[in-house]
Length: 190
Image 1 (cartoon, rainbow, N blue to C red):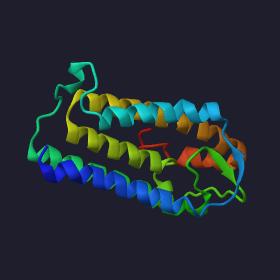
Image 2 (tube, rainbow, N blue to C red):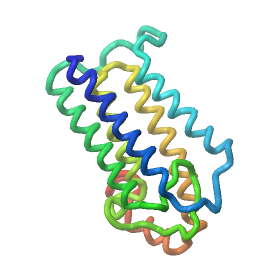
Image 3 (cartoon, rainbow, N blue to C red):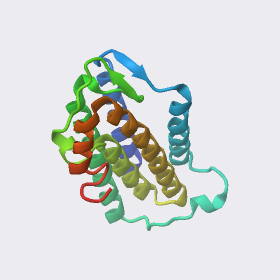
């Protein structure tokens, strides 16, 4: 990978993480928090995905074979997808405002947000992060990155299902109607 891209992807992800951390300081108090076992059930796979992305020499060697050629156009598309995904996640996070939580939680005075990216997908943060993960997997171009993207997808879908259950409990008919109008991750698809 050319040196520009070698540094660009970590800079994009670290900038996103810094924003995420800073924004997490101004949230509403939590009234209901997920059990630790639930948290581990999706954080564990996300940590595995991060390890697969970050450590280039994990065994077995077959994980290091390329599934995409190392070309400039692949890297340009991968950069665009990663940037678009991270920006979508930030936009969605900003729309949630003080209702946001890193873990599954119900906030004091929790509101159902259905505007901005939430008018297109019920879980645009997960959609954005999955798009960014797909872009990063393209940039790496090795099977380990594709495996990491698959693991991240499974983790986010699992977390999404847990979150859906709580949103139905919290917002009842209003949430059911929202589900009828808006797809979970990809507009008009999923």
